Each structure stands twice: as structure tokens, then as C-alpha cells.
Length: 426
Image 1: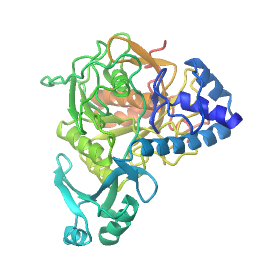
Image 2 (image 1 turned 90 degrees about the vertical axis):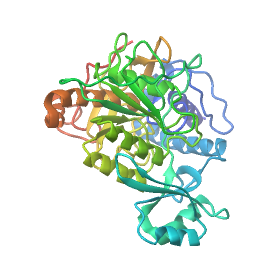
Image 3 (image 1 turned 45 degrees about the vertical axis):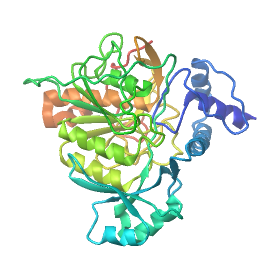
Image 4 (image 1 turned 120 degrees about the vertical axis):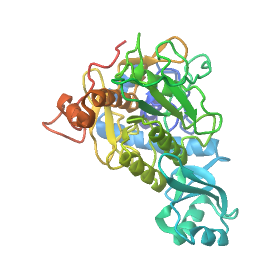
């Protein structure tokens, strides 16, 4: 029973799907099979998790991650499937990136059919969506396609974040036309997540675009992250005054958060001359997204990503693990690493990720916890420094970082804590 209780605590702490972070309280929970979870208060789950040994917490977090993925696949089986590594992806589709001569003909001869052939604007990256042969599972179709086109073939993997409507339904999202940039204006900052809902705490300097069915659709997680970037008033963001470009890659699509949607959103950021973008989403390594990240970085886009909340026993989180991406973890009010913080192949910084407020859809605020909410603070601070120091912004952020843990860079806190005073405390 102890294991069930621990898993229930962690599920209550991290509601929803496998995630980059979570909102508290009240988001719906995915229960363990055959287990009825008792209602838990806002503070009790955090307190209980803090009392666990990190080894025990890591083991339970990883079990919980696997169960939540299984629940997501079951509940959305018409739209998603497992790829050949067992990771969730869009059902019945593969993506051929930068095809070489003969790739498409060979694939069509083996039963694949073209759905869409497009070049991602801003990245000049050709991506061809193909329907898989109807008699093959996604995993088997990927193996067949890779025997023809190698690593140019990938699944359209799903990336997750948590946080659902907390109380009343969100008001309609609104897209604000960008104003003309004047000399000395803050650099444009980007967000790839859900849709940003209207809130008096988020200025009207927001331009939104949807990259999924039904997008942009207002989302509490994205709204909270947006307020931590540019918020003013009861929640002050790390870069108030900046213009925010918000890409909704979820909308109302059960297969939202796909690699292709994120890649296309990165291209949109490049087109709009966004300098820093934050991504509080996690998923598996993906060939298409890896190429898109490299191309976006080559065009001057700095990508900041959360390491996720599935614990240190989970596989490395992407896009945080891609080379050159600024990987961010979270700490609590005492500057202690969050027990649920995931890992990446490298770690750059820590930032506040608990015991703080963010905007909720409508007029209020909500308490938040998770690495999703640390990443925008680091990104906002980086953007503010970029406006002042240009190409020296990373060096300036390194100088600001407060060393935590063992002396020097380490795998728990990276180069240290940034934007430590940015959190709006309850």
C-alpha cells in the first residue's frame, strides 16, 4: 500500500499527462488502474514528496510517467499510437525530412501515400507527411520506411505539458497585432505551448498563431507561462515590456504537441525575428525536431526549455537535451531542487519553479510548481540581457547565476540560479 500512496501523492502533485510542469490545485487527475485517489490539499502533496528519499521519489515518478503515457494512449487511441521506441506519436503518419531523390517513389511503392509536402517557412526545411500502409502498425511502418530513407524518417512524436482549466472555462484567447518596433525596444520573445488566455496581468503585446486543430485555444498552462515572461501587475514577468509571440501547438487536437507542429512554430518565430523562445514541453528525441532546432539556432534563435517533471529516473527530456538548447530546472523557495525535476543530457541553469504565483485565465492568479515555470523566468531574463548586451547576453547571465550545490557547474543546478528575485510569492 505504501507504493500506491506514494504514487497517488505524485499523481496529485503532477496532474494530467506526462509533462514539463503543472498547475496547482484542481487539475484533473489520471488515476492508477484500480486505485481511487483521495482528494488532497494544495500543500500536503508537496510536503509528502519532500519527505521521500530522492531515490524512492525517482522510482515512483518514473512508474507514474509510464502509467500516464499508457492512459493517454488508451484515451486517445484513435489519434495516437506508439512508435518503434514505445513513445506516443500521431497515429498512421510518418514524416520524411529533407528527402533525397528517390525517397518518395520508393516509399510510395511500399504502400506509403503523401498527405502533405511542404517547406517549413523560416527554416527552409522540407517535411513530407505520409500515411502509413493500412495493414501496418506505426512501429512496423517506421521500420519499413527507415529501411528505405534511414534517419530522414521520423514519427510525429507527441510532446506533453500539464495544467488544465482550474475553475470556470477560460475566456476566448485574443491575438494582438504587433506594434511597430522602435530603437531600443526589448527583443521579441517567444512561447511555444498552448494558447494564451485574456488576463489583465498580461499586456496586449501578444501575437498568437495556431499550429494545431482548433488553435489558438486558451490554456491555463500557457497563460501562466506567458505571465512569467511579460506579466505586469500582481504577477511581474522576467521581461516586462517585451512583445510576446505565442504559438499554440495544441489547440483542441488530441494529437496536439506534435514534433511537426513545434518545428513549424520554430520557423514562425524565426520569420518574426524572435530572439529567445521558451518551450515548457517534453518528449522523446525526434529527427525532424532535431533538424528544426539546429536550423532555428543557425538563424539566431535562442531556445530555452524545461527539463520536465518526471524525475531523474526518466529518459532525458527533449527539446532540453538538444545541443545548444538552454536547459532549465526548478528550485523551491529555499533554493532546493524540485524532487520531481527531470533531467537532460546537459543542464544550464536553475530558476524559481515553486512557491510562486502566475496568471490564471480571467482576472486571478494561481499557485504553480514545476520546471515549466522556471524556464520562462530564465528565458525572460536572457531576453532582457540580450536587449542590453546583445551577443554577450549568455556571458552576462552566467555572471548573474548564483552558485548552488557543490562549487561550480553541477548536474543538479547547472551553472547556478538565475532570476532568483523574479518569483511572485504568495
